[in-house]
Image (cartoon, rainbow, N blue to C red; front, side, top):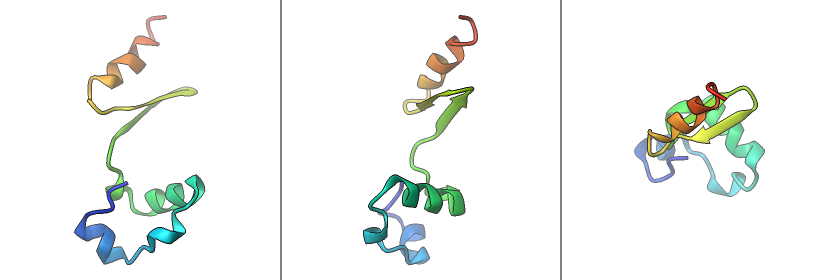
Length: 64
């Protein structure tokens, strides 16, 4: 999650409230622009697609 950004500051999010994964997910669902790295999902698998070539690892599962 982008925390050193004007958008984060403008939202007035208190970092102390982001102590657990569920809280972070709630913020990202409400404000997807704060997502720092893209996430690729395929079925029950997922990758953090940074570098972007990591998405190819996920797509390789389609061949298997």
